[in-house]
Amino acid sequence: GVGGFVVLGCARDAVQAHGRETRGLRRRRRPGGAARRRCSVSVRAAVDAGELVATATRGAALWAVATGAIAATVRAWFHYDASRESARMAQVVNARVTSALGTGYFIARPRAQAGEDTRSTPAALVVLLHEFFGLSLREKEFCEHLASQGYVAVAPDMFQGHCTGAIPRALWLVRDAAFRDDWQAHLDAVDDVLADITSSFPGIPVVVAGFCVGGGVALRYAELSRGSDHPQLRQLAGAGAFYGSVPSGGRQLPADIPLYLAFGKNDFEFPLKTLQPKLNALAESRAAGVLCDIRLYDDKNHAFIPNIAAVLRPDPDPAVYDAWTGFESFLRVLAKQ
Image (tube, rainbow, N blue to C red; front, side, top):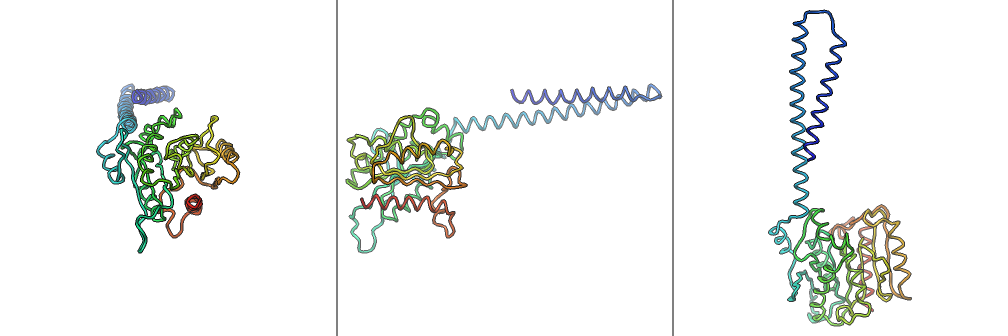
């Protein structure tokens, strides 16, 4: 394998160095006794042999490191620690749909203020979809913040119990969407949760938004509302994406769906050169008077909004603050319609 090539290469270099040294000895011979020359050659041979052993040892060490790195990558990609993932999900999921799919989710409801009727209708139902590492405390905290603003906020578990902090494992979890443009499993999870929740909040506006892969799912979920008779889709009032995959290939979101999109201009995942035409097409396809708020930020890369704490700190990054508070303004407009 790779380690074998490393060892052989190192041994080859040592042998070639020994050959060069021997040829140099021949050119530099001086008059002297044969015994002295034999002794010198023997010493050098011993030194060269020691160097050869040391080189082979270093090669073996490199081989072990390379083999370990490859094995760790394979484990991270294909294997997961079920007990660890379950423990992480238990910190977030506080409800589960009683359906065949049984999707888990986190839900945060507005707290009643003093003297306020606890049965009052929330301003809107906001569905916040997680990034490609899976549902985490990050989404839970965003939802709790939205609930403090008067919204019912929901974060579905689109990966059905799986979450990770390793990029190879995350890529495996989104492999169908990322490599085959097949988003159906994630869309099913969102629909499963919304079908369960909207029955408790009939008639209020529903806004679906997400980060990274969640943003791509949100925009594709909005596509499903075209001509749909599902109650949860009829309540859809808007969609948003923070640095998420924008649909292309002839697909188009319904012209009456308001949109909110925020991207960094240095996004390595969605380069501006290919992203800008898609954003322009979305803006141009909105019907007259339909809100379409697209924000692009200089010097910002992918995933530039780490958590809600980064927004609420006393001295937030201007782009982070503007992107999130812009989304809150978007929600307020939709809640009043």
